[in-house]
Image 1 (cartoon, one colour):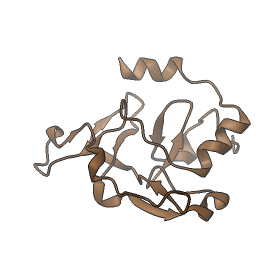
Image 2 (cartoon, helix red, strand yellow):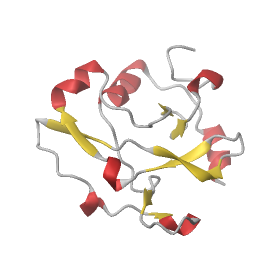
Image 3 (tube, one colour):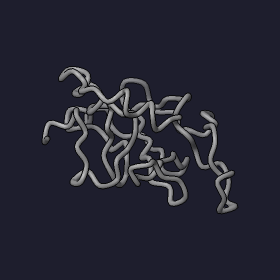
Length: 132
């Protein structure tokens, strides 16, 4: 199951990889899900239609997905799954990358070694967060 894979993948990232992930946002068509409907059911969430993402200017802007937490689906450790809402996907000036980039998870913080957002980072020990 997905939750068992999280436990196996949980190894700290190298410092270089962690810094790379901090500077830009990312999109993984195999794991990211988008909100594609408004029925209020789990069927609203599914594969993303990449044509609905904004076209950011090459070299001048970076895309930020601003994932947000679901209220209907949780991991066994009670952290929620996150999703991408097309309305929240924005382009930011590329020079923001040097100042930490954008937030991949809003609210929350991305735990790269587990490949997921954590809603309450103060109560979670992600192996690649320097503040551990």
